[in-house]
Amino acid sequence: MTIQRTDKVLQVSKLNPNVVNVEYAVRGELAIRAEQLKEQLASTPGSLPFKTITNCNIGNPQQLEQKPITFFRQVASLVDYPDLLKPENAQITSQLFKPDAVDRARTLLAAMGGSSGAYSHSKGIPLIRKHVADFIEERDGYPANPEHIFLTAGASPGVQLVLQTLIQNSNVGIMIPIPQYPLYTASIALFNGKAVPYYLDESAETFGLDIVELKRSIQEARNSGVDVRALCVINPGNPTGQVLTEESMKDIIRFCHEEKLVLLADEVYQTNIYLSTLPFHSFKKVLKSLGPAYEGLELISFNSVSKGMVGECGRRGGYFECTGVSDDIIDMFYKVASVSLCPPVQGQVMVDLTVRPPKKGDPSYPEYRAEIDAIYESLKRRATKLAAAFNSLEGVICPPAQGAMYLFPRIVLPQGAIDAAQKAGKQPDALYCMEMLNATGVCMVPGSGFCQREGTWHFRSTFLPPENQLDSFIDSVAHFHNSFVKKYSN
Ligand SMILES: Cc1ncc(COP(=O)(O)O)c(C=O)c1O
Image 1 (tube, rainbow, N blue to C red):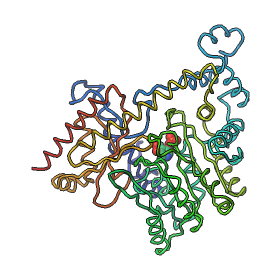
Image 2: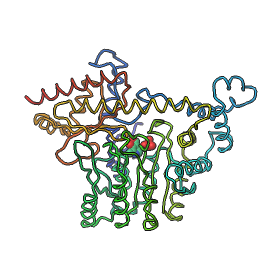
Image 3: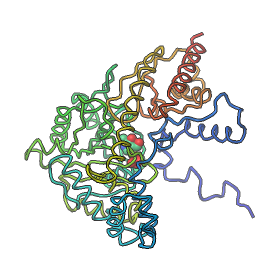
Image 4: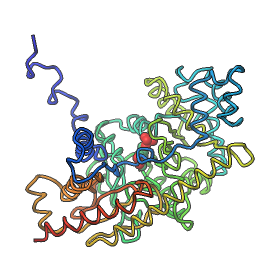
């Protein structure tokens, strides 16, 4: 007997409302439509006015033909298939792999007890956490404690673990930038907290972070009774691509100290830096540089193997470091991490490789250096070219990318488009992006998916399309834009 739909236990109306309320634009309506179109292209080639879908909706470099770093994949393969390390296979292995890849695989295998298929410590393999601590120490010039580092399945589960632990009740507020990466609004909704928005100051040059706005935001939230406990900063920014100056970071630290806030520093784009005048500084380093007066500040910093030049999003590797956080809280994080047993061991291997790449003099160094430099230079060229292309479109203003993987142009839409969107029950920039997808196969995310100042419209595009396809990509977006403006200006 088939159970009638109304008799089902699983009905949306009976689910956890926090789950029902979650929105996640980068994988939302546009991404779903892109999947449908991809299937249509596969099943009925020639039925659409374009040949492929270009996914610019998510910072997923290897989906857009970025090659993985050879050394990283070599070590990962050896770890996953240790038979290659047996003496009887030495000849074949030495033809395929350089000695430093073999040595690294042996070290990692020993550290994980012989197999990447075994659960590890819930905070991650101790040796890899030690390597992360060494990396942080070298980057910042201040000590790091491996016991204060948690390896995670990408930065997202780390952020979620911390938010879940922090949000004591539905009145707890977390300050987040607007525009923001939707992980934050989605996770705060999931754990039933309150997102307290602070607005980034948009200009033709960048999206600035202003202390006056932070003060306004916290005051307004506190006046309405919200118990604000943390401030989240994304640096370099997503979707906005700005890089904070050291001075601005000091102001943020002082603000958190005065207002008794935990500082959550999302630093997943720390190597995606494109201007020599705006280098990356970690919040850990800037905090330590301010001396003992700020020692008490609680800082949690996130990093990932998904971004940078590594781009190993699917491997799911990342970590967070706790600074100034009490041991009993670290024990709580450990308990929550233990519920998921451990982060993926392959992801942990990728973390190890990211923080301890080949060094000058190692056999794999020349190839590694050449690959990293080629990806970096290409990203920089693509960022510049795409920003110039967007800026040449009527009604579009696009600040250059100082960092990260995205451009976030503002668009002035014709009134006709705004009216049509209203009629269709959509945000105007969502209508723009949907029509672009249907006409060109290019999938971007509307600014409304990241929140934005009332009455402004944007779209976010990665600058990840392969360089040899960039010209045709730009042509098709420009052609669409002009037709869209014409269609809705009449
Ligand atoms: C700002 C920011 N934080 C966190 C993440 C999550 O990355 P992952 O979970 O793949 O490490 C992303 C992904 O795009 C991001 O842009």
